[in-house]
Image 1 (tube, rainbow, N blue to C red):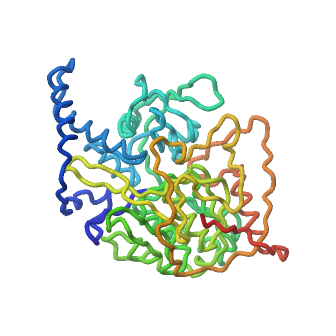
Image 2: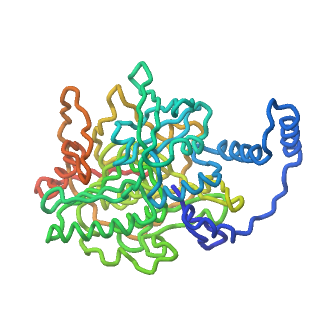
Amino acid sequence: MVNRVRCGKNFVGLCFVATLAFSHCAWPQRALPVEELKAFSAAFDLIKKDYVGEVDDKKLFADAIRGMVSGLDAHSVYLDRDELRDAQAGMQGQYGGVGIEMSVEEGGIKVIAPIDDTPAARAGIQAGDMIVKLDDTAVKGMTLSEAIKRMRGKPSTELTLTLERKGQDLPFTLTLTRAVIRTQSVKSQLVEPDYAYLRVTRFQEHTGEMLADAIKTLYEQNSAPLKGLVLDLRNDPGGLLYSAVAVSAAFLPRDSLVVYTEGRSGSAKFRLIASPRDYLPSNSKRDYLAALPPETKSVPMVVLVNSGSASASEIVAGALQDYKRAVVMGTQTFGKASVQNIFPIDNDTAVKFTTARYFTPKGRSIQLTGITPDIALDDGTTSDTKVRLREANLSNHLSKIAAVEPALMTAASTETSLRFVPAPRVKQPEEKKVPLEPGQVISDNDYELTQAIAFLKSLMAPSTIASVHKDNTQ
């Protein structure tokens, strides 16, 4: 997840969005380790004198920084000018590519999740697939930023992926045509009268505002208060921290604690609450959540998650679960509970590295373990031909630690009283996922969504007497 960068006690700007604002930070001068610098200088001198080919000084230093940062953890990277521009475009919701969220694992590139409505999703790429070649170039030893650079490009150009998939003996290839990836981060639809569906595909710059508009539209279309709402965070890899706060704030009482963080520096320790000061960008003057129907705070809710739900998705699911504001259904989430900030090196390059760990309002750290659903559902990724990829599977991941201090939950919601047993999933022989048609939001054979709606309807039955919420404190 990406945070707003802080300098001292004040937010300087959005990483990715207001990059130039970073230069206002005063960098502290620290004593440098002399012996280690001597070793680096010796290695640099040997390469310049004896390497088989001439190497540019700038490239050597950039590669040194890249290696230093990537060795920190699985989510820390060095960004050159093109990578910084691409990162900014991705957070704003538009870039040229195929639409894959990835991570580095065991010297290769592994798919966390394909992004909805992109060439990768339409081609059938799955979470857990291992990318072994990009066109004719093997990815072994390639950094994540190098892989992203090769995969992005001009629309209408082709990219051939060679992939390995658990359960298949041989690698296979897919040729994708790059497209302008305009990720609409919020999608919505009335499933049927009184029951609505909201999907957040990624937490981007305008996700909170788009969610508010979608909620208002759903209430207008229904012409009456909703009886149930499904918030779908499946395969949502995360994004901007303040957008996660905005989505949580749409459904929680004002000033509820949404998430808090702990890090080494004072600026890495902060609490974010359901308040405009913590979810509105610094240049925004309109509180887009203020005009939401009052029923939004109390409508019965289900949050759908799976192993592709990561970072900002887990913040939202964890906050709504802690307050018993919604029932979480699905499978264990990815388990990424760390915050990354972007810091400039000069006008063209930057480093993105982990500065803090985050905790849910109850003080839970979900690092490695993820969010445990209140109701477990088979999301279709348990067959022998698929694999669930989570933070714990990544090499060089951060370890899990206990909460540093008890969290204070400043507002509470009424506990839902219910008992619900999901209908068993019946798979047809050679069942295949049917791609959505352009403009279609809900799949015709979405088992998890069907069970979520059935659960919301069960709340109206007089026999619902026991809570499904567990004590999730860890």
